[in-house]
Amino acid sequence: QKEVEQDPGPLSVPEGAIVSLNCTYSNSAFQYFMWYRQYSRKGPELLMYTYSSGNKEDGRFTAQVDKSSKYISLFIRDSQPSDSATYLCAMSPYNFNKFYFGSGTKLNVKP
Amino acid sequence: NAGVTQTPKFQVLKTGQSMTLQCAQDMNHEYMSWYRQDPGMGLRLIHYSVGAGITDQGEVPNGYNVSRSTTEDFPLRLLSAAPSQTSVYFCATVPGPNYGYTFGSGTRLTVV
Image (cartoon, rainbow over all chains, first blue to last red; front, side):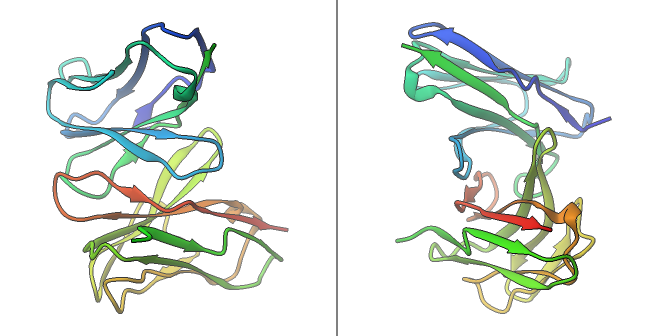
């Protein structure tokens, strides 16, 4: 069983929609969580970094962590065609390094 | 300020050949890592370093060597390439605890 599970998609939504991306995990020691965006043939870019349970908001992006359910989410409000990319979740027991990544969800936002 | 620079961008190797993937950073980050990305598998940690002279193994270290003689450089060596090492390789750096990774643009390696 993988440490981190993520639906590969693709997820296709119209412009302006609210997007929900999710990951589940099995290791209860994970405390630090990240979301990355990866455009085709590029390196991943950090979107959000959160610690433990709760919500964190940054512009149109909200990250949610539910440690009791071992479930994390990334919400994108007012989605734009430029948000079309693969979104990767990552998590670790440590506050740096040795992060475990999901396989990514491909998102397509249609104009 | 170039960030994280990886060379080469593309490489084709024959089985049994060796090569070094280069990673250089100009941000003075202490922590550097190598990941490989395969379809359906996500990114998996190969080796990492917490500073010059200090390296350790990640999740999938077999067939790879690393060294860290300077803060700026963290090369990844493939000792005897195998088709299973066909992948996209990413170098990533972190300035310290509670920061996310900065990734390079990747090296696409094909072993035939």
